[in-house]
Image (cartoon, rainbow, N blue to C red; front, side):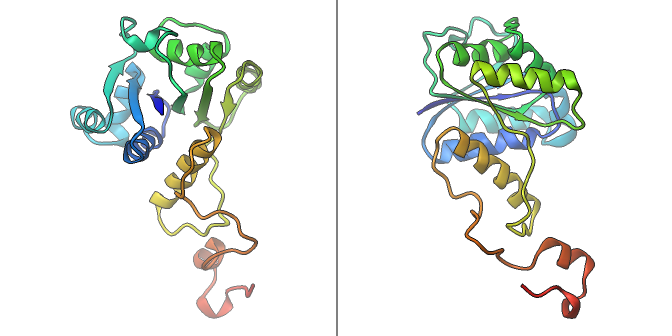
Length: 208
């Protein structure tokens, strides 16, 4: 499967990086697009920029930057099966919802909509204004899958990595890509519930 992962300047760069990591491990053909704001956020949330770009290049077929409109990805003749925008900033959401295609990131996303390919927008912002919600509605009507980065806690996560993988697993589910990144609901909660771990002593934890 040929997949693009667009990493924008919202907080949550780790979601895009983990997606690239998992997709590469599944032997998918992965292309990465980094926006200019993402390069700024990377400095605060991840490795130094150069090291992260090197890491992404090692995991993907190629890494592009959003000003590179000469990239083959900018053409709808370069067929992508799935496009993820992870994380998806509200600026990028607005551009996609209103078909502003003045950089590679929005061009690739809008190509996916034009061709009725899977486009998963991993929204990472809170709170949301009415205009943001309206843009999500417009993008959804056009065919995008809106996937806010809202982890569930019934799986009793024991680490930040498990929380990240829950969202990444959900994004893969939305794209129709099988995965076992998170514990799926089976009718009972595995392990000790988070509230019990945080607020109760062992002998006062609620029984289930």
